[in-house]
Length: 314
Image 1 (tube, rainbow, N blue to C red):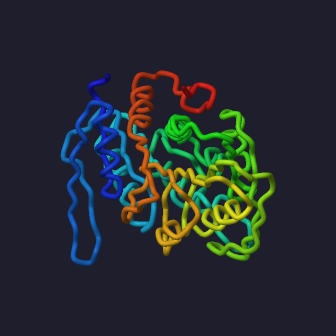
Image 2 (tube, one colour):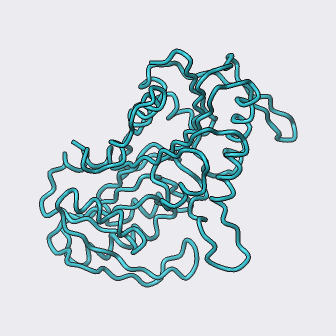
């Protein structure tokens, strides 16, 4: 393990950064904040980082202040003469704004990629981007990890009979298909019409779910409207059970209440985002060891391709 590695965290993801640093075997670095009466703040590193490989961990969920804090920490590290600056963004916010799908709107994920690069990052480590092509928005290396390496072992441990993988919408069919192929399971798809963001219109289930134990796979649960409606339809059509498996637990609005009242028997999520409150149906799986392994590989200039492939999972 290199001795000139420094790991820091923004305030929003401190809980995960502590676990990543512990798994890596190094204490998380200290960051102080000067806060002004008008709400302005200024982070500063308490430790010397000149010539270090600096890893800054921060998920960029709402409010946007989390993203601003990350920019400021990157700039501070650059001005403190860090050798390399690696942004570790477990949840890459604004990733759903990855294309211009109507007139006069921004491509915000591209804007953020430009801002991160301008701020001074040399590399990005992230997990389950909403769209794979976002990697192409960066002119620095992007290590795009998949939560499958934490989900699949747990799913296998359940020993579910008649396992069937489903996507809550057609946009996630490729992701669900990859899980289905690796697990030798059947695949069904939910087709929905969305009249506007966060509103689900009509939905139908394409495929046979009678007597099946269905797992809905997605990257994000936001309002939980789509996932809970899909779960209800699947159970109505004769499924034995239905659970969800989603990487990023945004869970905004009345999402927790919808999940508690839904047909879902279990919702598997990772710790890329903090839960606002506990739920009897939500189970959190840690990504700390995965991120720590990748940090080790990056520092030692080793391959991390094994984290990108289902075929390497045990």
